[in-house]
Structure formats: C-alpha cells, structure tokens
Image 1 (tube, rainbow over the protein chains, first blue to last red):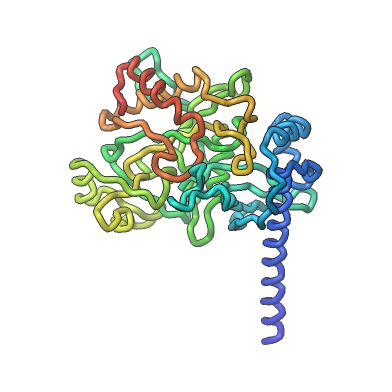
Image 2: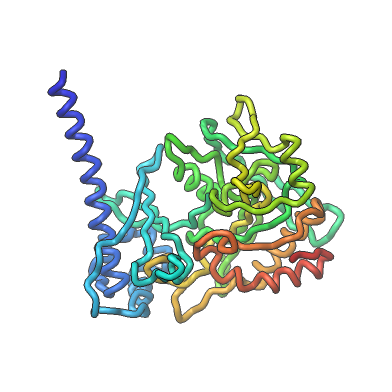
Length: 137
Length: 241
C-alpha cells in the first residue's frame, strides 16, 4: 500500500514537473522570437488560430521584425506562474515583465504592466500559445 | 432578445442579452444599483472577433477549484471592428448583471465611499454568497481604513479587441507602425452606453479605465480617448468627470 502511494506521488510530481518544464521551454522560445527575432520558432510557439488572427504567419513575422532587437544581453529565463483551467484542456500562464523593464525606484514595471496572461492550449500534442487576455478580477 | 435602458430617446443603444453559463459553485456579491458611481473601460486583449460567450468561457476557466469564477467579469461587452475593417459587426451585449458585483477593477483595489454608499454598506445591503445559499455581509469587501473594493462601486465595460501596441507583453497588440485607436463608431458606442447608464442611474458620474486602478496595459489607447467620449456623452445630455 505504501509503495503504491509512493509510486502515485512520484508519478504526480513528475507529471506536474513535466508540465512546468514544457511551459518553460515554450516561453524560452517565445522570448527568443519576441526579443531576438528568432522567427524560426513561430510555428512551434503559436497556434495556427493565433497566427491566422494576425493576418497569417508572414504578417506576424513582419510585426516581429518591427520590434527592437537586442543581442547585447543574454536572455534570462522567463518568470511566470501558471495554472490549468478546471474543465478544459487550457493552461493560463502569467509572464512577468523583464527585469530591465522594471523601474526599481517605484518597483513598478515601466510599462505599467503586472504581467501578461497567456492562454496556452495543446495543438497536435504540443503546448502552444493561443492568445492573451486582460487579467480582470 | 434585446431591451432598452433609455427607451424614450432615438439615440438608444440596443443592449443584447446573452444566456451565459454560470458556475454555481462560485460565490458572488449582490449590490443595490445605488452603490454604483463609475463606469470603467477595458479592452479584452483578445482578437476583436471573439464573442461575448467566448469571453465568458475564458473567465469561467480562469477560476480554480478553490477560487471559482461565477461568470464574465464585466457588466457589458462591446464588439466593434477595427479601423478599415467591417468584422465583427458593432454591438453591445449584457455581461454580468448590474446588481451583481463585477470582477474587473482589481480584487485588491479599494476606494472611498460617499455618504450614500456608506449608508448602504452600513445597512447591510451588500451581501455575498452562492446560488441557492445564504447571503451574508462579507467584511473583506472593506479594508482597514473603511474603503470599499472598487468592484463594488464600479461597472466594467469591455471592448473586445486589443488597443495596445504589439510586443513581448502583448502579442495580440497592433503593429507599431499602424497605431490602433478606437474608431469614431466605438467612441460613440461607449459614450451612448455610458450615457444610457447615467440616465437610468444618475449616481453614475465618473468614467475611468482599468489602469486608473491597477497596473496593467488595459485598455490601451481607449484611455487616451476618454475626454472625447465624455464630450460625446455631453452631447447626449450626460455629464461625466
């Protein structure tokens, strides 16, 4: 009985960890796109529905190319928190602003942003970003 | 089905009803309409083609087993096309009923009460509970200095769409070279909807926006057009600060 319990707990912890690891990997690639214009990751980061809502893949790439690119600093691991939606196969993850974007005097992000709430879904077995939403509450 | 808030005027905005699913396990608070004094503008941050029903589903999903969400957090939802597009058709939809406290300004944001609001609170007219259960006064609606949660005295109007610039913090935003402002039609809708609410309830005297209360990019450039929206509302006989 005790062995079964330990096995179950191990399975639970591993599953939870695998989820977090996959989300971290997703946001690593997300930051590579948005901060370094590494657009080769786009199909593995965003759902087709997301790209279609932005006029398609090429239009989205054009938007990314308009962002400032900064190769001078190494990419820090993104800071996020996440939770699974209770009824559907959806994950909500809040991505915090970059440290460089925080005004340390006021402790507030310079763009007045607490963090972005991402909607993450599985597409063909892989976690991908479906969109964002304003975090009301 | 639709109904009118301001039936005697030809400028009436039709508010469309939506039969939203609700989470009966979630608690919520009831309030008399006299508690309301402020309209708060939001944007959903989603594409404009999302439907009010989809926003409701997103909010139901936002809850957890320990803290479930009752239904859409806003009192009204507005659909409107961006500049140069025709989809979606413009429309105003009911959200969470006005006599239920919304969940939009920030759950940790508190505001002072005027004498009337304080009287309503002291009389125990703001009650919280679950469907089918007992409703009670919830002391957590007040902070230590007697201010009340902003959600209790405000109502949220969300524009479905994204009016902030594209970037790491906002991948649904507008292309930096193509600034997205609310169209004249959207400004008109927000002005007329706010005015209708004030005609119905003259205690509503303020128009604010999400990041007036809370650190967020919401509602993007809609915030910059609040003076124009107030001026448009004045044209319909309404005064907002």
